Image 1 (spheres, rainbow, N blue to C red):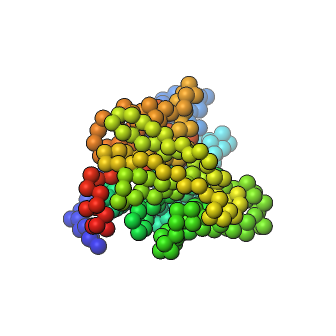
Image 2: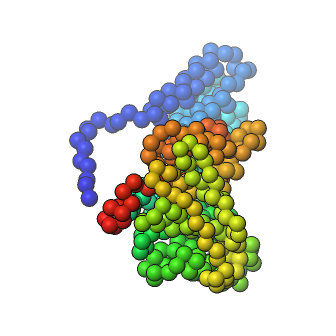
Image 3: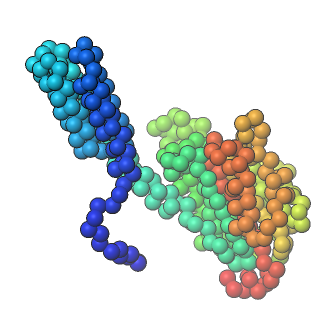
Amino acid sequence: MRVRHSAIRFTTPWRPTHGLLIVPLAIIATTALIDINTPETIHLGPFLIAAPALTAAFAGPGLTGAVGALAVVAQIVIAALHGGVSTPNHEAQIAAVLVISVFLVVFRGLLDRYERQLGRVRSVAIVAQQGLLRPLPRRIGPLSIASVSIAAESGAQIGGDLYAVVPAPGVTRMVIGDVRGSGLPAFGDAAVVLGAFRGSAYRNLSLPGVVSHIANASYWNMAQLAEAEPCYNESFVTALVLDVHDDDHSVQLVNCGHPPPMILRAGHVRTLEVSDPALPLGLGAPSESEYQVETFDFGPGDFLLLYTDGVIEARDRKGTFYPLADRLATWTGTGPESLVRHLHDDLLRHVGGRLGDDAVMIAVTKTSDVKGAAASR
């Protein structure tokens, strides 16, 4: 672990709040000067409360209290010059500025405490999400891989999108899926699916055997949870599980209700539709024989794109869905990283910068030296 050391500074660093303080201070000074130079029948003192109220929007309780105290002092000065502090009208104005300033200090202190607690929760969520969705390797066997994940909201860290890649004898095995729902329940369902998938890599199972193992684990988990929370009866996971073979130019896949992958070959896009897709995970406990494997060509120079429904269901302001196949065909770059970067930027332009659902895209390509790459695993 590297630790960065920085030089010690003996001066207080300039912060944006220091510049913003000019505004509430100007409000106090301007209000006091105008009120002092106007007839006693005109009372501008109540406007002083705007200063601590504005300060509470960008500064902590300390600065808010200091500006509030200054506003109270300004109100006392105004009262002293306009008939005396002890008059009922001035006493009421001083009390009002004081009480509201105290309220703003308490409010800002509670808000700061909430933001600190929220920051800790987000930190835990980030660690948990990173532990579950480990970064995909840039290279595994004969494959080069790049991925991008786009959160629907900047503050959201826990979700139901899932993906993983593991090596298996003679193949690279991949899964991508999407849990119905969001938040902690979806995170838990995703963890079960990924745990079962990664655990199956060491059991030398066939592709249908892997899918059956994942489906049974997901069904058992949801059945147990449904006993306590009936809403889990409606939960499920769409998933795509596939094997990319090392020694030939093919990819085998089982689709459990997930959007079909696409292959880009020489500028043309092909959608890998299966003839008999399986039910999403969690809707039953099927046996291995119930899953049908379909094989497609996938050779050197081809690009395989996996994605979640957050991509194809993204809409622009007119309600038009994102045309993934058309936009994929327009890409003219090289390498999977360039491809996902192109689609990431294009997707955000389509929706105007913010998605309505989380989205994941994974691009995979194969080296021309298949046998050599397989031998180097």
